[in-house]
Figure: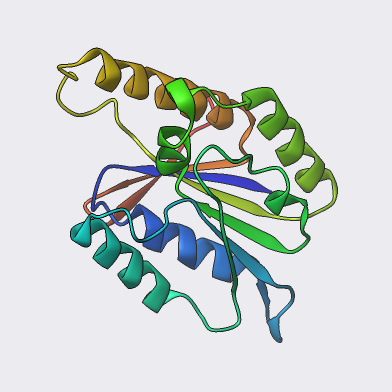
Length: 177
């Protein structure tokens, strides 16, 4: 099972992803498997507001979840090689950490296919940047386009795509009506 949760800043997308991962890791008799929270943002970059947001995310996580922090420019493949449920939060921060916003999309897609084949659920949280103001710089345009392309490719292969707006969840159909 591959789920993609999209939303804008402060939309509630991370909380939706967390609830989904928790639900995927439970059975009627309790927890069936581990949850690995793949954090793509780290504290200490000189941005107190950002550090506080990370602290809020950490405080919401159940104590039995395993957190793996991915450094800037690092591949997600090694951390997604684990079993159980994986929650990646968020792809926007991950893309932003790569030089020129270039990620190995084919490697990521292959890794996600292997997880699906192994029965290991994956929840990907990503920013939807295409709804905001037109970026005023070439760097902003490059980021929006890179993340938009990544989101579209992932949506094409996801079993479930959810869009979060103002804390409300819309389940997106797999094809046009």
